[in-house]
Length: 432
Image (tube, rainbow, N blue to C red; front, top):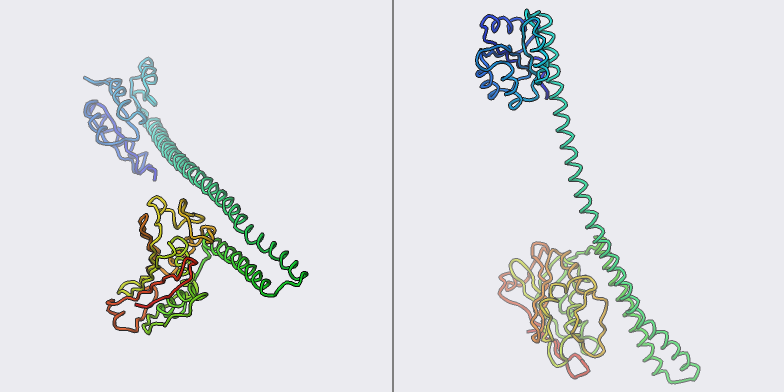
């Protein structure tokens, strides 16, 4: 807030005690609420100026020691914007001109006319306050300009980051389209070729057994395309932050057993189920999807004669479901990217006949686990295999462990999946 007349402060400098007393009295009668300080010498005036800011300074020119001109010069360094009025004798126009050239705001001639003197002081105060307003507005403009500059810089940075992100999105999109075209081409080619073959077989009256085999192959190709489309659908919803889980009360132990049975059920009868239970509020279909993805990856990158181990542990703070294989493992530089969208580990060959996929499985699996408030972690060593762990906090799942052993966190369940022959036929799934 800028000062009003009531806030204005004036300094009168004169070596004449009578004038030093009369001038403030004269001004107070004509300018209400004006605060006036006095100094009987230029040296004392400078001390006051160093301690206090003034709106106007009035000084006599002719004073012993430091005169009014010397004071005017000194004030240029201390308060250069403060208007200074110099008092000179009648007819001393050369001193008045010198005063104006030296930087004085105005001059007052003796004998002093009271009304003229008050008007000159009023003009000087108005000028001082106008200068203050201009200075204040200039500072505000400078601050505003600096703020605009910062905003422009910030927006430029954001725009550059957005351009980088957009370029990355475009690159990912192009990569995705190339991968989708490549992955879809195989099943579509198989379906097209098999349908043409079956058409010829029907016309030639060949056996129904061969037709059934071909129909099974077509069905497998269609299922593969269905999985690819489902993965793309999930990935799109994750990117748009529209991916959600549908929770319900679920026996987590039974969920693991069912996923393992589904993984091996095509060639092996279902294993005997355990009586242990651990009830939690989860999305059973989505968690099964995660577990099946981890099991398929483990099978894909494991030697045919080595087992896959699934461990279920109910602890006080979290549920841990781990899938361990004894395959080739993942290099450390690849581990930091393994959960990224469309990322596929290079240099690691899968089992014969395995399908490589779009590189979305672990990306979607991590999103599902995180939607449950949990973490999907991996530990791997080259040549020794990998362990993927689904860690779900009990506070998020409203877990109710029916068995005392689960409540105390003293027991875990373990399934070991082994294989019958080099054709990768599952042998058994054993509860331990």
